[in-house]
Image 1 (tube, helix red, strand yellow):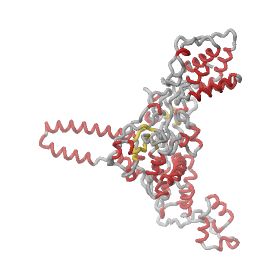
Image 2 (image 1 turned 120 degrees about the vertical axis):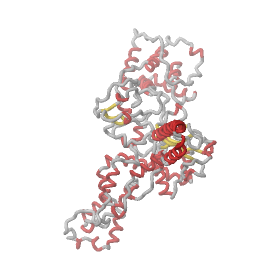
Image 3 (image 1 turned 90 degrees about the vertical axis):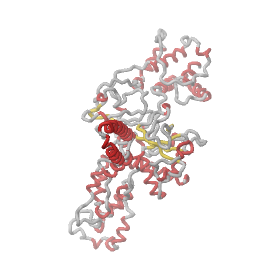
Image 4 (image 1 turned 30 degrees about the vertical axis):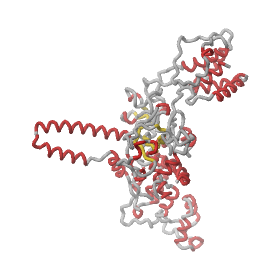
Length: 580
């Protein structure tokens, strides 16, 4: 019984079990003693979940994907195209791109690629579960004696969940009873896992041959929703406040790249907005009674999609309702996605599964989409959306006399098509000569109905301004500003001493030149506008666009992710009606 109690309290679960719960677990284990297989399985679960107790990832509140996604670069790519997958530096495992020699963390796209890393990663004990059976079998041997190490390795994460064990129990000789020996073997197995020289963990990053670094732009960038009432300085307005932030109860924080584990404290964001520079970040409000100190994180790209859906539903960005909804959620299980792959990848660390690379693709800036959009805009003066979509033979009207649809006016026929899906229309064309040829503009309606997340078809809204930059870009911008300031101060000193007659004019010219430089938000917005492709209704071949999107769907990872997030956020927007 004492062994079972120590076994339960020594597992270092992040949220320790209450004494009553511990008693129930011990009772279950006592029953398990009668069934050896069940007991072994329970101990096996404790061992396999022991590898990194404490580390828990925080996911986007809108799309349920983590902010700690990694990429393994190809050998032909520069080092910056490979980066770490965890938000803290305490965690064991190959910190891709963060080693003294990042060149060791590469991938040639082969199953056996990757050089040896100097970093250490705990061995996956699930691969050696047979060792546990061997240990337990040896224990039954009458001649077996337990070989104890002189000193045990200290656990990585300590808790006080065993504090209710008395000193008398702690001081007991635990090597005498069989149950104590079993407990010591359990501790020995946990604390003496082998430390092999390993190759880069292929599960800790998406393969560079499957998704490019450009496609993953901003996948680790986070921004938070803050309650002004619980941050004293947040009530004052900022110069860069968006319209939906002014006069309301909520505001936005700065940005951060990666979000650390829950047990690592607050997160540093830049710039410091509304006086908040290190918010406590979590998916949900911790307490049900008005705990609005929590900063609710999301990808800026996901907030852009929320903005578009909110304008579509309410006519404006319903930021107040979103804040009310966020701080009314107290269940971590409420952070979920409609996409089953999100659940498969959501583990203690993000599981970079092959085929799920689209979950990390930027849904706004999609490299392979822009050429398609540009290619469907027509320069031909004779082009008209009233033209036919298909190349049909001149005699395609033959047999129309037997077609009942031929008796209907054109307006009625087109109205009939508006109730059909693309597959239904394709079948109708096979059975009716009247619908063999269809106008190009019909496919615009199909795009709006079947692919509403392709907003380039129906909207010219500019991207959410914070989605056009990253934490890294802001830090780099500030670095350049500081270097410029140092240069200007040094130049002022020299010119004032050596050429005082031109100092005033020079200083005014430099000040004017520097004032014309765009800030990081303006620079990001300008770059985003250059990437936007507008589709004029009268000059776009909508049928060609429809076929290009469907034909290239698998390669458009960003558009796949946009669809996923659109469906997730659309569900959230539906719930905001009761919070408005």
